[in-house]
Amino acid sequence: MEPDNLISVCGCSGTMKFVHKECIDKWRTIKKSKDCELCQQPYQPPWAVSCIAIVLFCIGLFVACTQAFLLNHLTTKYPGDLFNSVLCSFFMFGMYSMVFCILRFFEYIYTKIAYIVWPLCFFSLSILLQYGEMESIRVELLTNYTLFVVYFIGWRVFEYFFELF
Image (cartoon, rainbow, N blue to C red; front, side, top):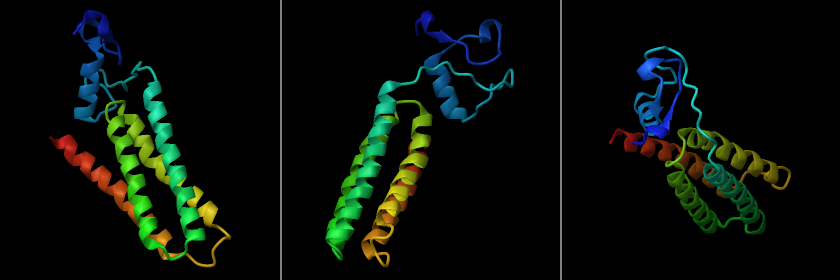
């Protein structure tokens, strides 16, 4: 570790004032605490916003919108085609998985925000697109919604077990 890679993230002073960014990142991941154990102040990380992580986050947002549009297209143009609807859903989940895996190398907050924003975007856009076009909810929609929820819950469980090792 280079001495020029030191940052100050809390109210500690003296030899405890400066820490390596990598060390504090690892410490925050292990302890899952937002406050310093010594001075009891919340961490004020001076991390720079990562442009690559924001781009990846936006790609995930784009995938969520694309999935909503494709689901709308499949259910309006090809009613009763459950196979293609589920196949499209699995393809999109592969895209989400790729983006989630890459996001794990950036700040933890991007993944947390993705867990909220992507499903919210998918469900709100999907419901908005379907509103007024169909008399009743089709099996394809319910299947896709169920797969979407199962995927995000399953991915969170996978991440939890991945963090244990």
